[in-house]
Length: 115
Image 1 (cartoon, rainbow, N blue to C red):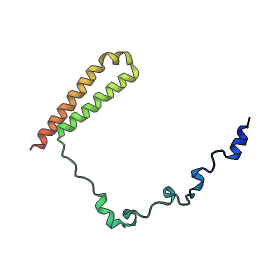
Image 2: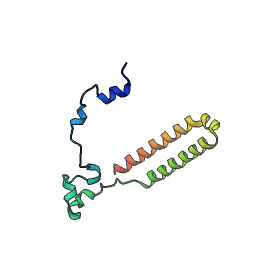
Image 3: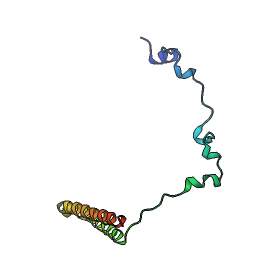
Image 4: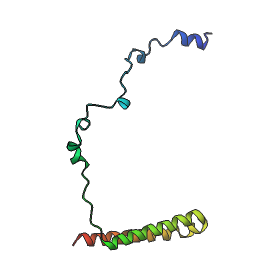
């Protein structure tokens, strides 16, 4: 019986395809890619790409509802962390309240955008 070391040393499989490949001498991660046109642009040419999208107008009422959503979410997270048993009894109510507040915020925003 032939030992495993002997089989490996004799290379029963023949030459592996990977041994015929050229070894990569250039690392695209560390050396970067100069083919990209944005790499060659100076700061004046890059300015149009840095432009931010216009922000939607938000009514003060919608912002207040958003703050209320944040407060209710924090209350739920605190309850979940410190009193899981009680939270399990009221998590459906939290879900309903947060959904109702999200719907209210959407409707207020929709009315505000219609003006």
